[in-house]
Image (cartoon, rainbow over all chains, first blue to last red; front, side):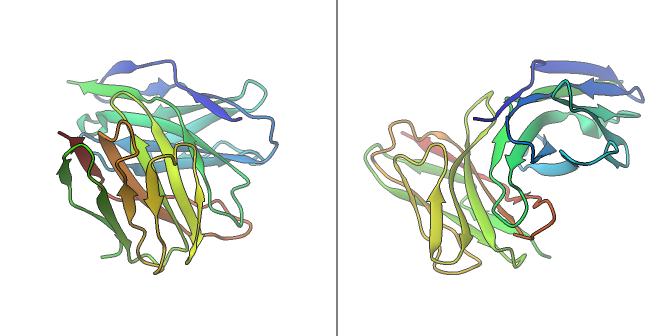
Length: 117
Length: 115
């Protein structure tokens, strides 16, 4: 069975600094997708970035980038130039056989990021 | 505006009662999902549906039931058989495309409290 591990329950970062949120995963399936979601205090889940297991390059979306190290089974999220609005819970998730079927997501327990002045 | 709506935002239920949570989407997505979130935890999949009139159990389906009579709607019933129903419930939807990842879009959630 697949598993996502996020070992940082909470992180602090100063405004305008970069921060890395850790995520490791475990699966024996060669075909998978890795996702990061942001959950503000209001509760909705906001999609941030995606990385496919066969993608050669690390994914980037604006200030978000995914540091994908396949051999280490890690998919860390890097947020550059942190803003106060980045304060939220961040979840790493994985899906298997994601093409042509409903993508069932397995989530980690999340990291709470607090951006300070 | 396209999106997913869930109602109500807050729901209180007496122990032993069934309750139905609403989820509607106007994104024309084929697949819909229900997740449960407990404090300090990630989301866990309850049920999902890839197409109308078809649905499958997720990891924690016991004590829950769903229906998918319309593409736009995927209501979740929390039955009295669910031992610990107090949680935050999130509905999501996605396309089902071959050759592409299927990003899930989430609704605002329903917070259920059993009194």
